[in-house]
Image 1 (tube, rainbow over the protein chains, first blue to last red):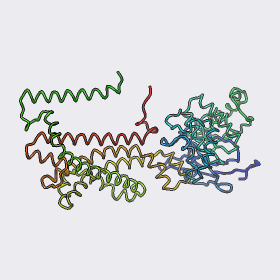
Image 2 (image 1 turned 30 degrees about the vertical axis):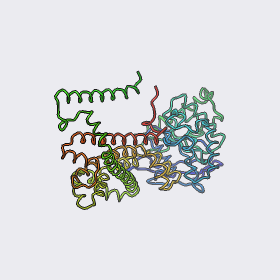
Image 3 (image 1 turned 180 degrees about the vertical axis):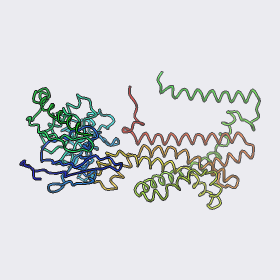
Image 4 (image 1 turned 135 degrees about the vertical axis):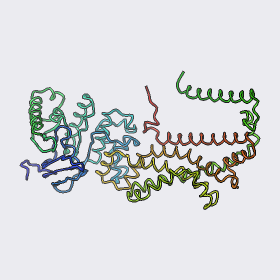
Length: 255
Length: 260
């Protein structure tokens, strides 16, 4: 199953099925390649198994069938959950430092890394604040900063902006793209929003609901940097229509 | 009028009114002190018997404190052990519950048979106080955010890192709730055991003073001792609340001021 693209997949889910203990079949025969450096979205209605696919990719869930194949060693991962998932008892800086601390990184090195990554998400002056003192958008920034702290090759994001208001979501979309372009990490982004997926991704994988399968793959070849102007462009609208049609077809095919 | 001032002023007014009514009732109906002493007499007794009562208070407080510390350490340790080794939890948790639901008044005489008196009283204080610590800590350790657990797993945290850096801090609010309950209960445990030891007791805690004063119809001293016990309970409660506020500080909703 060699990819025709120049950069081969860094990780592949092959024929993955996942049945939960209560009998729910979340994924069935799911095939998915992640190519190095790309921004790819998994798009589907809620409950279509896209979060499960992400957790299988992160080894946080074991597939019932099929395999997760890494090209070489399993990559260093960053994971951003749907909620900010911060430790309320720790300051912003300590939350971001957590992955480094768990890896027993040196004090000086991790301090520098935390300062750098906080600057990247624009939270330098909130380093000593506590999560409860922050707004929803800022908490999500902290969560992203934490995921970036270990400089992961692969960043997995599970509907990170779903709970935010539109203004905040648009800003975080832009900031995320900026970070992605600067760092050139690979991002797998789970979302149920057609518009968000078209705005962010190079490639969109549309999934069928229950059980989750790949229904269609759509390349979005609009160039980066994409900014707010792109949201208003006919090109963007065209892609949205194409993806929305695919999603509707995927839903229809469902029982 | 701000709410803070009211919350202090109102209870004080109620207290003053109650004491005044008590005093009036004693005067108007001319009630003898061996039935109901006037509040003034209780205070006078507190002053005249100060040395004796203080000594007793010290005895009771020492036992309460020892019982509390043992309950805190034992309860938290046991909860951690239960949390780390599920088999041990399944094997022993029912007995921890049984120990708790059996009324301590009923166990106290038996303990007094088998243990030296001071140790029996301490054991009573411990039995009553340790369960809330165990139960609350267990609850706290088990209700850690699943995504945070997943995050620790993702970064390949060791079992001890998960315990020290995630589970124990996450359980801190519940642990402190357990400790606050245990503080009051260890005083109750000590008092119950002292009363059960009764006149056989050479130990002279405050509860023993109350029983003894009862036999002697020294009702004013009973009241004075009761007042001291009550004050001790209040002091314990406030000390533990202060500890809780200090530790939860900025991060927990329960400790933070709500602005509007």
